[in-house]
Image 1 (tube, rainbow, N blue to C red):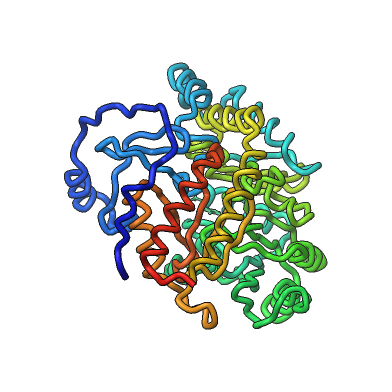
Image 2 (tube, protein in one colour):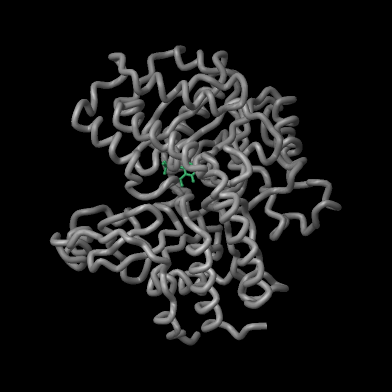
Length: 456
Ligand code: PMP
């Protein structure tokens, strides 16, 4: 693998933001402190972990002042830009006025934010329960589904990711994220709509969506025939932007409902306009879920998650007393509300569509040029580029993907990776990026891939 030294010629698009001079502990000191005092389970990216000390819109800065285009958005969390001035101002005001009392007292922000979310949801989904993370929101979703239906069995999707708490880890279907001691026996996994690696070796549309119909067999063979729910990410995030065919979810939703279950869309990564075409990613499949789970991008960087469902289903949370100390706190609610306002006011969804289409088109052109690119997929600004060593065998190019990330960092570009074998580049930037930023990404990838493998 040869290193390409053309990185000098690549220039990030102009940005007028000057980062403040950094006067904190050095990167090495921070690393040493982390190694000594922070659990080794808190992972970092890169051979030499990088330190980021400032952010401005689609860019972040390390302690030396070097600027990077953040194409991973703090793992798909910064929706409208790092420290977006309008969001930051509102939250700063709130921090100075009141941070916390819990929901045992009234505060306007939780009620107003819930109203705003209901306004964005499919008809009838208008009761929200707020948490601090996506994992917790999924816990509430599954708990509610089980209480509502009286059934225990949950259907999730292979290659999916739903979090790291007990039930959420069980919903997750990547062996490397599943600890041996912590699995819920009532969660079953059906096949993903992963056409590039079809589990049945078929091709769309002649496959007749065998992957989706698989849920019927799963219910009949592995459950008592009645289920609590189905949960799926419309586009699998951690799984590497796996995007099922158009009929996939409607087939599953029908079968699951016939077996007593409700349907949950995990919109933690795909929501808030990221797919460009719709506000919610599930709308691209023309289905209406009974419950929507959110986190990450909903709050543009504060701990904020939530689950929204119907009035009827939401009642089950009164079956016992349930409480979440920080869920619905005024600071997160204000930040969530300000984020939603900016998404609307600045045409963020439309930008995701326009820049996303441009980026995907250019990635597809790169695929023609570089053999390593096996598949380009996703929608809007939720894109995946799967790297393979051989286009016929589709052998995952895992170490090459890690190397692309390293070299992209040197060039001033932060990317993510995902998929079972860590061989899919994940491109999910703040949705305020420009076409120039997209072109910069393409130039980076072109020069990196050109230096790694001979072009076809
Ligand atoms: N659902 C999805 C689709 C996710 O991508 C994630 C996080 N990667 C979660 C749930 C869990 O969210 P959190 O890390 O906030 O608990």
